[in-house]
Image: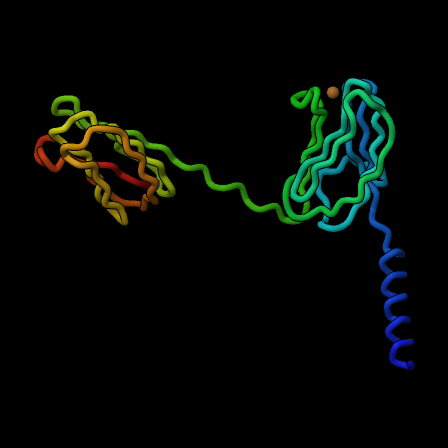
Length: 209
Ligand SMILES: [Cu+2]
């Protein structure tokens, strides 16, 4: 009985501390004009927050606007035609959150980051090349190191497109005609492209830096 009493006390204390540490409340506002905003309790526009639990108190005074909050784990919106107030309990985690009006998303919008947002994925470099028709091979002569999407149009059944270099050895078939896409990681250095059917004639060099 004594042990149970201690456990109950501990549970009560945990509940009390959870209730006592009230989540900060953010103030969202939209309308009646073409304005939308999100501020912290001191009235400062929100640009960055620590991860955690928050209340979002939204005052929607626009009957042609809504307040829509979207980000990792959150997708909440007021009504476009309706007005009124609402408080959402949300848990914000690392990432970028956007708030906007669905009726005027390019005009009425804002965003903020939470915690350490993951870096945007690196842009994929795109290169195009072709072989044929006739005795012709075309490809880039310079590119940057990194992930690269290569699209090759093989327009002849007498030649192929063959790319060789650091970590890459890709080719179409000599008799093959069609378009292929390779996703490769280019390293700094020299790459050679050629047709294996006319090695001396159809060839070139790609320099990756
Ligand atoms: Cu609007």
